[in-house]
Image 1 (cartoon, rainbow, N blue to C red):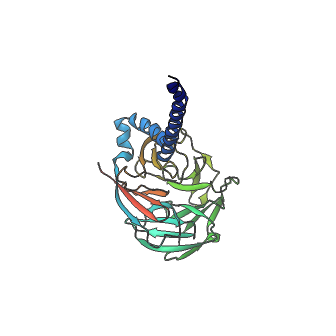
Image 2 (tube, rainbow, N blue to C red):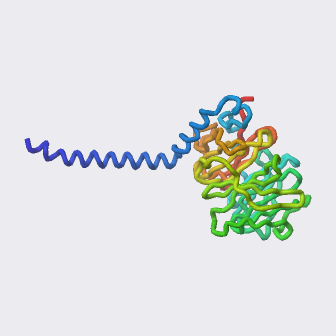
Image 3 (cartoon, helix red, strand yellow):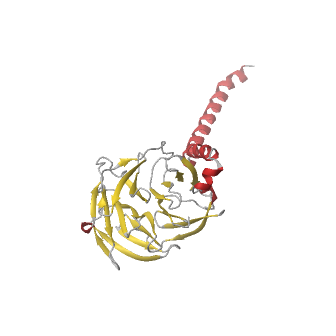
Amino acid sequence: MPIPFARAPRRRLLFNLALLLLLLAVLVVGREWRWLDLLQLSWKEWRTDPAARAAGVWLPDYRLALEVELSGLEEDETSGLTWNPQTGTLFTVTGKHPQLVELSPEGAILRRIRLTGFSDPEGVEALGDGRLAIVDERRRLLALFRLPPGADSFDLADAQRVDLGFADAGNKGFEGLGWDARTNRLLLALERPPALFGLAVSAAGAAGELQPLPGEGLPVRDLSSLTVDPRSGHFLLLSDESRLLVELDREGRPLSFISLLGGFNGLGRGIKQAEGVAMDAAGNLYVVGEPNRFHVFRKTHP
């Protein structure tokens, strides 16, 4: 009879080790799949009433319609994306070799504009009146300018420059830009800790100081880009670490989301490093990911 008693501590030790390994596996998988982020957003989404869904973007209705590589940008690290209503094209910037790149809605490269004087362009936005804005994360500045017709290069010295502060942000400074036509202000996304700011912009240029935007705590771990739906005015926030695209209403409350993991919303392999998002007047969504992936999402329900 002593044998079973001798084996009991060993069995208990093996059981505890197995339980520990299972717990570690759950934590690792949970971190990769961001299940806490998904649970939190799913709960808020489920509580959204039908009227609010119809008035907003409502991201669950979107599915991947196109995925292509931006040929020739493999080594340039695309970051940021904007829809230019005046040209009917998109613009992105590249950080490794500073460029402003114009794209067709199908992801064809139309032209490249070399950026001189820029250190680390991370976000780009069309203001709707022909001006463009670029945020340089490393220099912590915003550049406002008009791109000359047919230009193949642009110098930072020819732009209006705005010091954004946050000198201690390092490589976790401002990454995203969005244009809010309703309030004539640029929205700026701080990468980490994630936060949104507004900057009033007039025909003469930027005016005033950065103002923190009110709202609930952002349900993402970082911010890599943002855009504004031109129809509802809702904000769309892109998070690389959380692998999410989240819709906020005008008061900063989460309404809906898309997971950028493979298997969701038509994505096969997922978007590993989402760096730019834009929306056109028809409601089509565009997302770029490093190094050079281009995605188009369209709504499946009217």
